[in-house]
Amino acid sequence: MNNKRIYTIIIGLVLAILLILFACNTQKKSGSELDDGQDDTSTGTPPASSPDQDPDAIDLYRVEVIRRLPHNGDRIFTQGFEIHDGYLYESTGRTAETALKKIDPANGEILLQQNLEEYFSGDMYFGEGITIWKEKIIHLSWQKKIAYFYTLDFKKTGREFHYDTEGWGLTHNDSSLIMSDGSRFIHFRDPETFETKRTIDVGVENLNELEYVNGSIYANVWFEDFILVIDEISGAVTGKIDASELFCSQLNKQTGAVLNGIAYDSRSETFYITGKKCPDIYEVIFEKKQNALITGHRHQDFLNLSGA
Image (cartoon, rainbow, N blue to C red):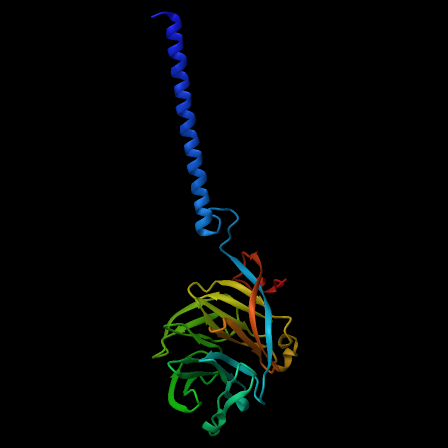
């Protein structure tokens, strides 16, 4: 074999090796790009290891008013608010003004009202939140520490639950009654016994009227012009809804006129909100404004964030 032929063979082998290495490198790069693309498409969020991701992120929302209804009647110190079978049920407080009302959400007309002192001779309670469970209204008292049962036409059933905290807000999911007591805690209670099943720590005091929607608890905070969105499992605040532009939020708070009352209508997928002593009921949606990264949202500091 002459030198020229040997040289040709060596050059061919070198070129073949280079081509193989180039092909392998190209395939590896393409596979990596495909994997990255699949991750972005399937999750819609950065990978868990991304430095841009913050587990304490909350969303900020504004209130978009669809329409305004009159908050009728002589008892509008709202403590509980709930939609059931197309009607709006409201409970009002203060000892001499505690009542249950059934309202037409189309126009705000009071269809039925029961002033509850008629059931209690000299032993009336300060009414608080309500929820409807198995076609019965469960009505909390503030400091009497008793929950009373009523029919949907506001007849007293005689059934009661006793508890060891104050009573503020009440709602429910598919398996538990969900109750606030004016503290930073929310209690999940057995609907048949009212025993506490578990408690979550939201990290924000004065949690008041509650509503439950698809794994989230919406909570008024006493004397504040916003609504919190809370994860029902962890208690983490996942959203803050700025309601400061509503007339309800601009009344004299020192008279007790504060934002309170959240009811979700699953048929229209809208919320109804109001306040104590507020002349209006608003049908609204909550529109996301921006995503905020807040590392200290379990402290009162984050509450000072502007909704803008």
